[in-house]
Length: 383
Image (cartoon, rainbow, N blue to C red; front, side, top):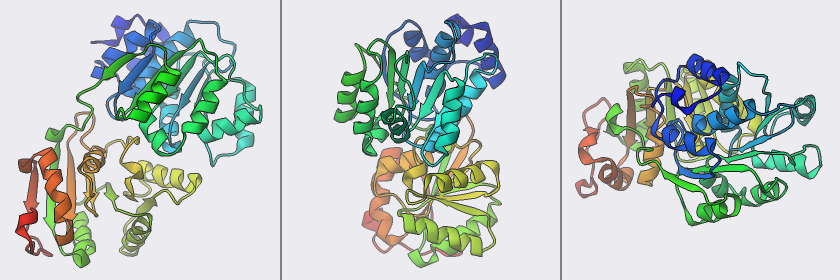
């Protein structure tokens, strides 16, 4: 379906065309007409499926076609500052031919600067729950005329303990509003939250929200744990990798591996939950801009973050859950472009590889036993 069939504002259609959007994705095709007609929506969809545009386009279209006094009429809640910034960038493009204003309200940034933006008059707020609740509780932001509420990555926000903040924010919003909740999974607590904030929602389940494995070439290299770094450095050089996202198990592993890569003369940055918001944002921006071509991360970057033109994903540590593997490798092979996922598998991690191969298909992972640092697995039964 093409976007012209939705009878959108000409200014919005022009912005959509300039953005390079052509045909709708499945989530856009189902969600946009529902939100345009005023239905609340509960949808399962992940980053990379086009779900951000699925809620932004009808929301912006509605705000464009009603009187604009630069009061806050839309609130979008996200679990992380990285996702909030990305959503803000999407809004910037889609409102480029309108006079709508937006602000990204996140922890780690100057409260004074955010208040200046708010007081100058804005229409859309993209926020993390903690910072928005702080401003709300201090009566520094007026949400009494909000017409749109979007919760993005709902299950992740609940996993991060934001349920209390979300409930307090929602209590201050008008009862009559358009609302939508997007979540990668529909766990019981997510469904419970949806019942609290949505009114008779249409339920949309996108069955193709997992990465297209046909676009991702998957490899598992057998290697002794003590030789993982040597093999990683060899592969980075041998394959002339211009950028790579490398997943490790713990926050300390992220720091340690990043330091070793820097010592080897590579441009690397680390991303994990112990870094403050400013440090995390800087690491992510350095990677996206190319200032650092390697990002070493915990599973903080496995969901909710879209990294353009990422070709290589490494599992330096093989995840102990098969679903986590899917989320990790799904950072590549996006928007129809091919990607490569490489796992460095020690003997102790063979037990993790078995369920992964069952989930993605045994034939979809090529086992590489012969390389400069190869070893033979000691327990074939674990394969």
